[in-house]
Length: 146
View 1 (cartoon, rainbow, N blue to C red):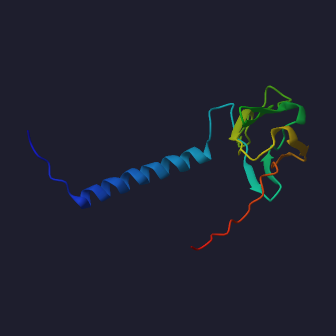
View 2: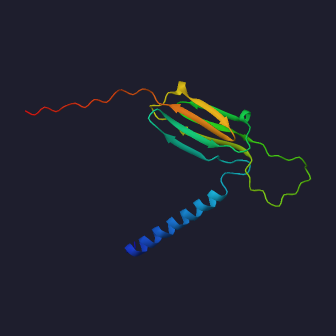
View 3: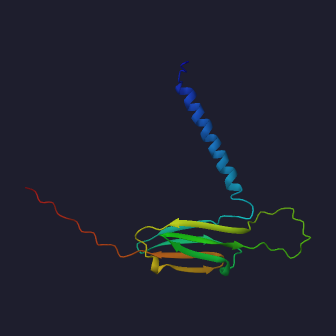
């Protein structure tokens, strides 16, 4: 049995090489996410004292092609963006827009009221408002000395 000496310098270079490969793969995936016929819409999530709000970009998607579902505190937004071809003899030179099915899922926080969820769709933006439940009020308890 042979003993290999460990070199901290070699370990650091190996780690750096693995991280570089990870970032390169991530950048490649960002430019071409999913498989053909699938895409992932961009989402902004923000909150205030009364609610959590999701804004989902769905350009070119009809409202009737979007499904909003909550199961076991998981909100799922799914649907389909239909490709627009008027002439089957078209020959594309560049096709950068995404078409096909999409799905995004989000685990809801415990303080969100599932029954009060509201959704609006306008100008290619789906806005989902998740109202927070009234949480128990916070009370500071004085500490008595002695």
